[in-house]
Image 1 (tube, rainbow over the protein chains, first blue to last red):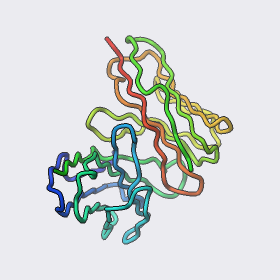
Image 2: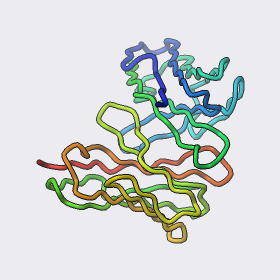
Image 3: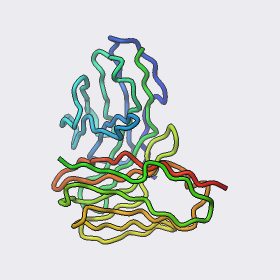
Length: 115
Length: 112
């Protein structure tokens, strides 16, 4: 089974802190994604990556950055956390290649509260 | 810009009923469509993936259909059970891209 692991289930941070959210997948997937999920807004894509050291902006990249130094790990960074970044953060990964395999697998999520 | 809507936002049914969840998208030029379930406070679990060239996919009690021309997909759940209670999300992938656009979800409650 594919496993996508997010390092923390719950985080509480202060405004202005630098926050790292870590995601690791064990299926050698090329593609990795970071989403945030908010009530009434659904899932919105923050950043994604097709390969090591490669990153692309999603729909709402402002206030975030990412790092992909190794294929299995994709980190989301909040340079200076703000209260409007309080949200549920979900990481996902998928294979490239044939369409049939291009299913996204999600981690359990990290619920971040910025006070 | 692709927009995905899901109706109804919430649904409550007695155990044993067959039910249909709806997903609509504004741009019919999609690559594929995926249905997920999400349990409270947890991540998403993939249920079914339909390619743009397919009309439907089935897995157990679940059947998903796709009508690209009308911008619609339905998820049919047969003989619903309390364990089916969750939020169901549909997501469409843009053509020639890797990004999904998600709908807001339908929160399903199956009452024993």
